[in-house]
Structures are given as structure tokens and as C-alpha cells.
Length: 208
View 1 (cartoon, rainbow, N blue to C red):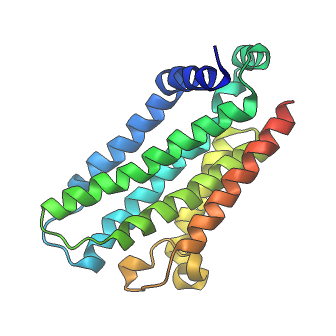
View 2: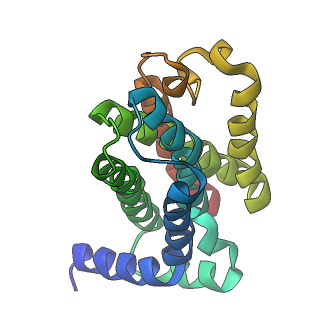
């Protein structure tokens, strides 16, 4: 079996055994959004409210636990002896987690558009950026602490802090669009990618 096939096989098994419960929780958040918020006939600022309040939480659910399976010593032993390098396993998890992180807000935006709300690609990009920032914080926190509770707590705390500090956070304010600001969230996107990118080799080195 070639290296690429081994990685794909490992990724398929991981999707089924480890990732699916986290994806179901993230999907549940999306499905709860129409229940918690009215999605009909919203203007652009109104459409930003459910997207900014709910979608960043999916980033925490999808990216924070990408290193979690190896917390089980039995899984660690299996991973250590199999032919797929650990960095490839982590990278595959990060890639399909990022894919769903991008798809879930797109799904919600399609639903809002069907309900005659004003949605734009910028709102999708904002939702993805904030989700990635929180998810990157969670992934790096788990790498540094090796404690899943602490790893979830750090991005959740940052999420809560945004309600108090607001615009004082500048381009790292999660709720800027629903407050009427047109500031770009690209810095959140880039920082989230950086945090995730740093966490993978750090984790691999730690487990080597």
C-alpha cells in the first residue's frame, strides 16, 4: 500500500471513530440556530448576529480535539508503531476539520438566503475566520496543557471576554459585523491558521 493510500485509510477510520461525534455536536449547533434566532428577512447586520454568535463555537468543537485520540495510551501505542507518520495523521485531521468548519457556516447562510435574509460572502468569511481563531486557540491550548478541559476553556473564555471588551479587541473582536463594523476579520483567519500550524509540529515533537 502506498503512503498516500495509508494516510487516506487512516483518515477514513479516524473520521468514523473519532471525528464524527464532534461533527455531530457542531451540526447540532447549526440546527439549533433557527430555533434560537429568527432567520427570516434579516438585513446584513441582522444576519451577522446568528453567524457571529453561533459559528465560532463550531471551531472549538471541530479543531480543539484533533489531538485527543492519542490521550488514550492504547491508541498512542498503536499510532507509534503504524506506518503513517504522526504529523500526517494530525495534518489529515486538521484538513478535514477545516473543511467542515468552512461548510457549516455555508450551510447556515444558504438556509438564511432561502428565508430571504441578506447574506454576503463577507459574512461567510467572517464566520470562518472567527471559528478558526477559536479552534486554533483550542488546539494550541491542548498541545501546551495536554488537558482537554483546559483546552476547551481557553477559547470559551476568549469568546466570553468578547462580550465585555467589544471593540477594544480591534480586528480580533468576534462580534464586529453584528455591531455594524465593516472591519476585516482576515487577521483572525491568519492567526487561527498560525496557531493550528504551530500546534501540529509542537505536538509531534512532544509525542516523539
